[in-house]
Length: 122
Image 1 (cartoon, rainbow, N blue to C red):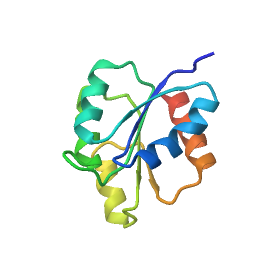
Image 2 (cartoon, one colour):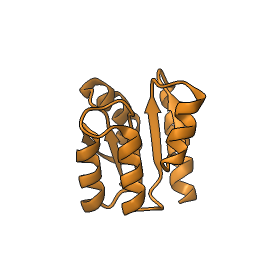
Image 3 (cartoon, helix red, strand yellow):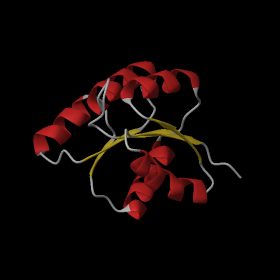
Image 4 (cartoon, rainbow, N blue to C red):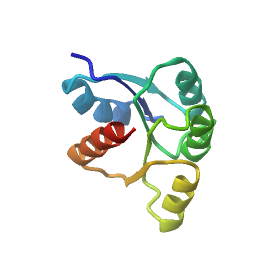
């Protein structure tokens, strides 16, 4: 039984696949995007439960895309998953609307647990 649709955004196909596997194994449908522009377009057309997005991407970075996504769908939870580990980066990400900010490398189970909790709260 499908639990909902999640968007995974990262310019690395390897990272997208790494993130998507635990969600698909647990009954979620996962769609992917390679950059922020593609992510914003998909948010406008897909019925999503969650967005998991890298910050450092071409065309439209994760901070910019997060802000645009929240303008389109205020209550859609967004997790920023990034190598940018400064407190100022996390602060800026949250200012753009991120509901969660996780540092790479990440624990797949922790990401999954945080994602499920965010979806339950929204």
